[in-house]
Length: 395
Image (cartoon, rainbow, N blue to C red; front, side):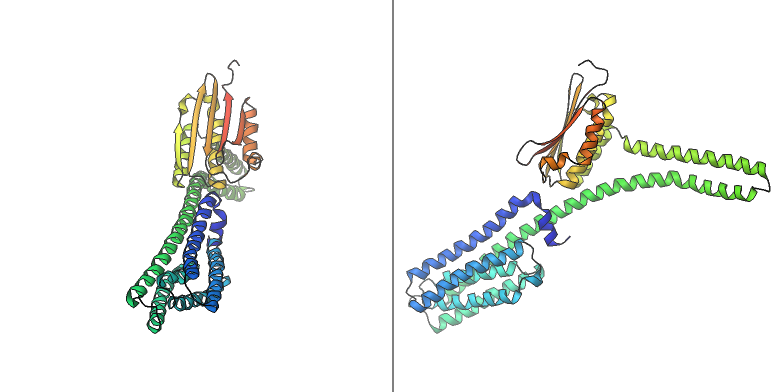
């Protein structure tokens, strides 16, 4: 899965995504605001003031644009890397130029830090560290050369250059750590989805292996019996009829065994379904809380509620970005209620209610006088609930 697909699929983490990119934008604006303060408190002259004011506006726009490249996972080929390099270089030169007129030259290091930092994090991960080193060294060399050529009285060369380098290094490092955190969120979410898919695939492989083991021998025997019967027809009809009868019996036995495997696969008990659901969701990185006693559910209701748990687990793994699930089992008199809730809702309740799985559950529960609901019970909490009475109980 590409970065772009990761970003589009991370619906449940949209709040975190907004927070990260808003904090990066805010930090850049804060740094440029400090530069603007020095711009209006220092006499740069009319030409320089206009030039530097335009540079600040351009730096604000460019940082937001460069952050947008990374936030939206735009392919590197579409990011116009030449523009990013030239913008960062211009920011370094303008910062060094402004440092020659200011008694606070270190603050102008924020200009290349804000623009260059956004350029660094929008680059491919493999080259980010090298670009960061290059930005720091370029700032150090350019500012040192500019201050050596001309600086105001009271401004020390080495401290000013050292602080400027520190400002750029710290700012870029914070940007890199923030984006690395976001990368880890994407990787962990991707790994969680893969874990869920692998757990489901493992269960399908188990079923296919059971089916193969049972049918393989029977089908091979049927083929051999059929070939032998063909050879005996016209030569020994009595033996051919005997083998044909055996072939029919083998086919019946294979059919019965196949139905038995399918029947046992579909009609796993509620206890097993709950255990499988917990295993699958925990393998997918989802915290699961189970409350209630499975044994309290009446035997005739075990299979319908098992189907509800299985369908609910499938929906959580396929259609949500849940981090926490709660499975509750309640029995009040002859009425049993099973609820499966999760905090990773991505679709409107109507979309979930219209799903074939939920409709199938409703039909199944309807045959025993029960009901199934699928509703949003909170801002991000979705709950699948089954309710049924033990057959034969008085209402």
